Image (cartoon, rainbow, N blue to C red; front, side):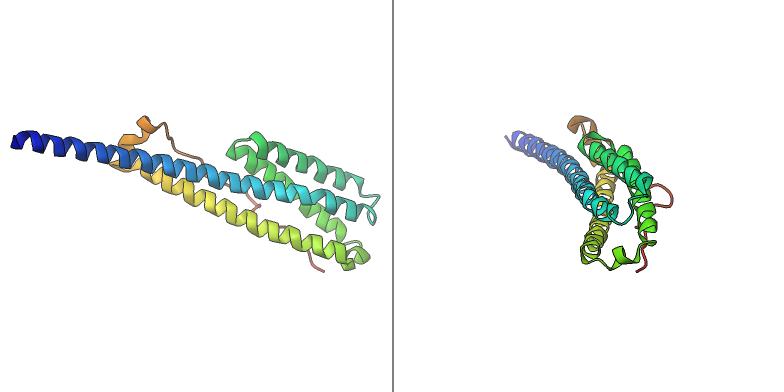
Length: 186
């Protein structure tokens, strides 16, 4: 009788351990997906502000067509990557848009009236806020990925990785030179 109770307790303990391990990895995997979704939201928000910026600048910089077209292409790339891209594709699209925005801001420097325009200033503040939110979303994603990757790499949680179907996640690495938002001096 006592051996039966001990066996039942051991089986229940192993079952509880399995459930905890399984749930831990699945929860961390969902957190990484959620964090990646946060990056998508901020990339989309940033891309949605671009047409307003382009239209505001168009009136002042009609001859800067190439820069405006480059920003528009980069925006489309971000939208496509946010919809269905991998972490690396999102990072690359983000980098291209950042570079295009930097060139656009350099163009804006040549137009003092534009820099003084209240709509442009408000739009610039929105873009700056979005850059901050995007940086936070990237960090949040990388933190969630680090927690998951640590669990997958350590005992005893790595024993559950195959059973849960959870695997190591890539970090969101901004390409070299993309560690800061473009600066604009007014």
